Length: 568
Ligand code: FAD
Ligand code: MEZ
Image (cartoon, rainbow, N blue to C red; front, side, top):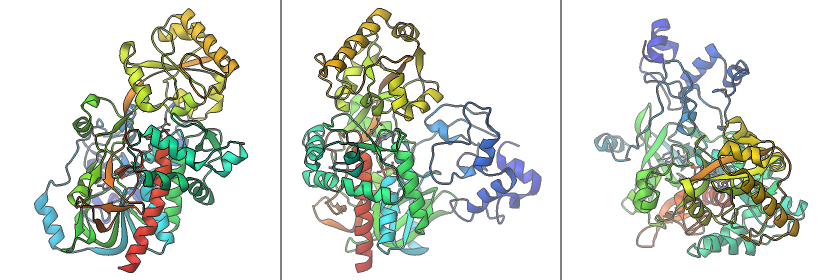
C-alpha cells in the first residue's frame, strides 16, 4: 500500500473510513475523523503514549479540535502539518514531504461557473471568510447580534496567523494596566501608532483601534481570556502589550477563547473550504460566495453579508517581492495559508486596496528553528549583539529599523542575548528551549565561545549594558526601557535574522468595516477586518497592534454584518 486509503481499503473496504463509496460527506471530514478516533484514540490519548519523545507530533499549539486528517491524508501521501513552519521530519506512516504550491482563485473557471449557474446549495445571514482572530471575533459578535453564521476556512486547521501570535495585544487604559500601576492614555496609543506607521495610517481607523482597545480586553476577559501580564513592544512609549499571566503566547490563547465561544454560540465552521468568489447582483449588492470544498467541490452559499477576514500574504514570497523587491527570497514567520488569495477574491469583487507596498520584516526569526522569536524577549530585557560581540541598535525600536540594523551586520544576522531572569519572566521562552534553538553558557565567556563571538567583548558589552540599567539611561543607543540587569547565570543566546512578517496593506474599509470600491462607494453587504485590510497600521505596524486590530475590527465587522443582514 502507498497511501493510508489503500492500507485501510485492504483491511475493510471504503466504509472503514467513509459513510458510503461516494467518499466524504463534508469538508471537515466529520465521519472520517470520528472513525480514526474510534480505532486509534483521540489526540490527547495518543500524545499520552508519547511521553518519551522530546517533541510529540500529537501535542501542539494549534487551536480547536485538531482533525486527524489534517496530517493523515487518505488518498495522497500524509504530511505533518507542523512541518509547514518547523522541520521536524517525523517518520509518519505513508508520509511524504511538506510541499505547497499557491493555487490561484480562478483555476477551473468552467467548473466554478457551472456551480454558480446551479444556484445556491444553502442560505445564511452572514458568511465569514477566515478562521483567524478577526473571523472568529466576527463570528462571536454576529451570533450575539442574532445572525445565522457560516464561517469558512481553507486550511485543515483553524486559527490562521492568530494562533502563532506571541508577544501580546496592545490596549490602553485597561484594568490589567491599572492593577500593575501602569499609566497610559488612548491618545498616546494613537500617537505611537501613527508615528510607527510613518503617519500614513488612516487616523480615523487608528482612533477606533485605540479607543476600543480596553473594551476589547474586557470583552475577551468576559469570555474567559487571561490578559493580565503586560509588557513592552517596539515603538510603544508605555507598557501596553497584554498576554496571559507569566508571559505565555497571546495568539493561541485568544484564538482558543474565540473558537470556544464561536462554537458555543452555534457557529457553523467549515475547514478545507476556500472561498474563490464573492457574488454580487446587478446592482452591486453582495448575494453570497462561491466555495471550493476540498472534498465536496464547488458550491454556492447565498448570504446577505460577507466578512472578509482572510489575513495577509506574507507567506507568498512572489506576491511580497512584487510589492517590495528587497524581500525577495526571504523566509516568512507566517502560517502556510497567508498567501493573499482572500485579497484576490476581494479585488475581483471590486474592492479598493491601499498600502500594499508596505510589507514588514520581523527582526527575529530563528534560522535554526524556522520560528519567530517574540519581541517580548527583547521587551523583557534581552539585548542584540553582532558577531563582534557588540550591541548595535536600540533593541526595542520599531521593526523596520531593527531589521535594517541586523541586515547590516556581518552574516546578516545577530544574537539575542539574555540571562536566566529574562527566561523566568516569560513562559514563551520555554518553547524556544524545547525546540533546541537556544545556546547556553554558565558565563558570558562560555556562551560567547558556543556562538563564536569574542568572549571578552561580549562580557564587556553585558557589563556596559548593566551599567545603563543601573543608571536608568542607555547613553549608547537610547533604549527607552531597561527592565533588568543581565547578571543571573546561565546566559542564553538565539541566532536571529529578519523574515517577512506582516502585510500592512489590504482592502480599504471605513470605521464600520464596510468595504470601499475603487470609485469610493461602499460595496453593499461586504465587510472586512484584520490583516486583510489596509489603513490601520500605515507603513509599519507596531508589535502588539495586530491582535488589537483583529479583536476590535472583527467585533465591529460581525455586529455590522449582522445588522445589515437583518435590514436586508
Ligand atoms: P489570520 O489569523 O491569518 O486568519 C486568516 C484566515 O483566513 C487564515 O486561517 C487563512 O487560511 C484564511 N483564508 C485566507 N484566504 C481564504 C479563503 N480564500 N477562503 C477561506 N479561508 C481563507 N500580532 C500582535 O499584535 N501581537 C503578537 O504577539 C503577534 N505575534 C505574531 C507572531 C507570529 C509568528 C505571526 C505570524 C504573527 C504575529 N502577529 C502578532 C500578527 C498577528 O498574529 C496577525 O496579524 C493576526 O493574527 C491576523 O489575524 P487575521 O484574523 O486577520 O488573519
Ligand atoms: O505584533 C507582533 O507581530 C508581535 C508582538 C510579534 C512578536 O514579536 O511577538
